[in-house]
Image 1: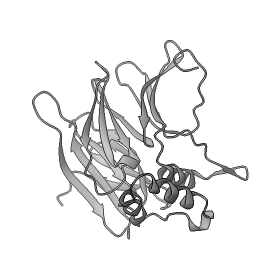
Image 2 (image 1 turned 120 degrees about the vertical axis):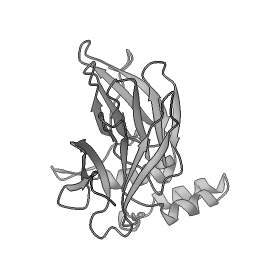
Image 3 (image 1 turned 45 degrees about the vertical axis):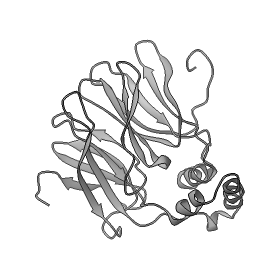
Image 4 (image 1 turned 30 degrees about the horizontal axis):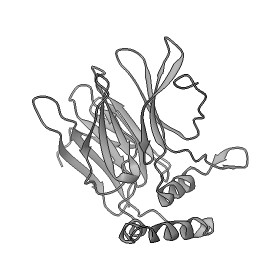
Length: 241
């Protein structure tokens, strides 16, 4: 039950646990449910592609409070809500809104939302914040798709016809991601310093690691998860680059 009414969570995506309250903050990316293939596999990438193509904003960010066993919606109307990070004082969340290509900052104090960056090299996915440095991180699994540029170039309402046409194509012809590996490092901003990008780590052609969807900060290293590679990437933040 969410906000006193029943509401399905169909695409739970990422989460962070508040260091002060123990509340669980998590994203529900879309109202589309992934299809199950057999008994063990879920078609997560294909469902995300379909959500991108249709262009409907049904993603949400939710909060679960273990003390009350209740869930409430903090933000809705997001276009594929994804990565969630929380600061050490639990005053704000960092949220990746993948298909609008931007990172948001949500205040847990007053409920306001601001844009940290909407000029990324691709679509941000997971998120995490370093409680020691105050910096946050968001992996970028794919650079901007040529198909996306084509869709946005088509004027309304003709773009709807274009989107429907793509959605009825066989799965084998669905949009393919561009091989790329990237992690965006940024300061989310506070009363004394504006938000800013500090570094961008890239594997431009995805030769060593690509399709990064998860990031965890631990002892000044980034541990990177991927939907493609069969290993965990490790990035030493202390190493000069």
